[in-house]
Length: 419
Image (tube, rainbow, N blue to C red; front, side, top):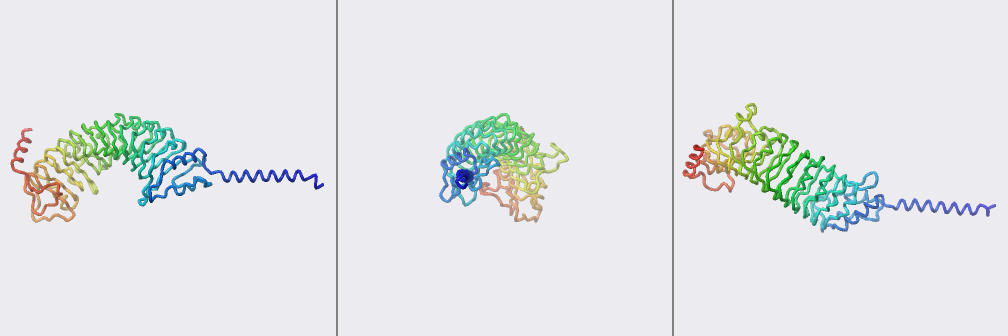
């Protein structure tokens, strides 16, 4: 009888062995897509840790679960990579070197691609535009070169694009500013050229283009913009495009060649507490509450800063800006006596910095016996008056001459009266 059951016994052993082998093989298979694992391998091959960095020390391709063990890798429910952060971003980590592998485009479920500061060189792979699930691209503070891939203009869900502090060249792809989901675009500190796209339909909240070589006028921007910086470029023309930006909190168009008057609407926005218009060719007078809105008496408040220095602003100083905490009006063509509102604001501590040097001002009505608070910086040098005794908190750039030569004051006053 035992002999009759022997074949069944061996068959059972065979089946048990096969099942156990299958289970073992399943357990040994990495819990990640094979396509994504191959892509990660290629990405690692194109990058390396800078001495002192240990980012790739956890990238063991024999590990059973790379989604859990690989630093910087996050996977979704289907074992596909959804977030890839290259580098740690820690202050004591020097980052990565090498280049970005085209294999990045094989991570087809990727929603966030982040490259922390390091020494990564070469172009941005144009095939990243194929990753239609991307919401965040942040490749900052490296040495990337070449143009911004035009293929980025096809990413329907892209919310944040930060390519700042690299060596990118060329112009901004016109389709980029039309992306329906784009809210944050930071392209500062590169070598971008050309004019800004004429159509900016993306409902941007944050636009930072400072420190490039962008030229041309400022295009009409969506009213949703809250942060705008185009400082240190080669832009020119009037600032009419700023009139509709009622949600601005921060504005910096300094160090360009913008001209014409300052839009008065900027000063009717109480949320705009940081305003930098210095070193342009702006002209016209300072804002006046009577001309704009009699119910809006002053602009500024705690923490506010306004820099209108190094322009061609003319006329008297109006009281409208007396509530600004840090105010730079130096190096313009302002005339007349400083309104008492500014004097009061300085001495009660509301205004902590007031630079009026290098204008054509004729008086500062300082109350007799008043002492300037230690926390205040007030500079009145090189005007058409002798600064009050004890007021000398001027920067070195103001020079050593306390007053303008009388000949300059006479000529400028005469020209102003005939215009």
